[in-house]
Length: 149
Ligand SMILES: [Fe+2]
Ligand SMILES: [Fe+2]
Image (cartoon, rainbow, N blue to C red):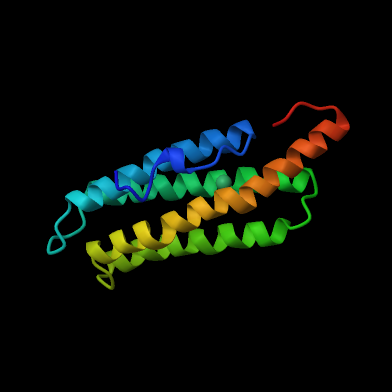
């Protein structure tokens, strides 16, 4: 995988399901990037790329919902800021696929968007929003004497 995206670059946030999901996301993203790198720009997007993109989108949708459920459960104050980021990026991912299908963008553009826009955002998001959420969840769990999620 590209030097832009490595599992090791992601901070462990300390909430088990989040760390597991993030690791899975990196694996799915690596597949997308590998397929993109192996694809020729003057050829139609291969079916494997569509499948990888669909898998990543489905994973992200489920992961974002899981984080939103736990944020709601602990009444995380900046819930809407965190959720808005999820919603915007999910929409962006779906748009990437639509644009690829309709020929608005090519494989090189898609690769550029994944490596230079989506991936840095994902890493930043994990290090800021997700980290803050995880700390809050752990604090609440400690306050109520429950084990972390
Ligand atoms: Fe996350
Ligand atoms: Fe998040």
